[in-house]
Length: 207
Image 1 (cartoon, rainbow, N blue to C red):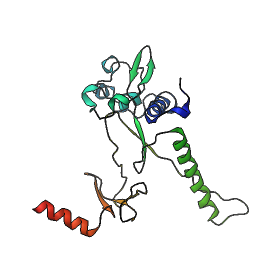
Image 2: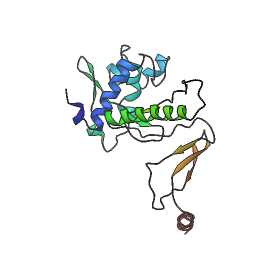
Image 3: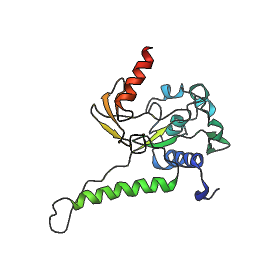
Image 4: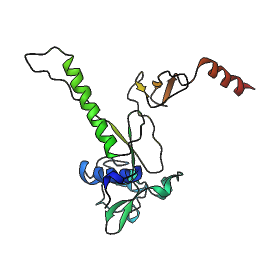
């Protein structure tokens, strides 16, 4: 057991993966193929070759087995999720809707507070009936990414905008993505580079 204050992002990934698998989600939620055991088994979970039905589906999502888990540069730093009886599984990593990786409990708590603060702010700007103002709760979306995989934006509709304040460019302009197509996923990246830089890229590609 470690002090949560000393956790790095890999410890955090393992902790949150275990919390979702064994506490926050149902045993058959968020698996690679929810509700279809035959298809799910073919991914080859690390545990008993995918034949252990007692494992939560989320574990099979995070760790899809050696044949389906690309090796990334930080593979050796991953902290296994302990499943009992000597069994272990690779963890997921967790990201916000905008692709920011969540690396600590403090960061997760701050995101939750920010979400609640936005709700209160919207409430104060509304017309109130008496002393009561009811504002809809703003959801905090977390995106789990299987071990060996990288985050991919998950758009819901064409025209959706993803603001990316954590992406900084030399011009200082705000960077965002606009969804042009859902399948295949196509985005218009706004303000990532200037027109002059764009022209230079095209020129070099044509040379």
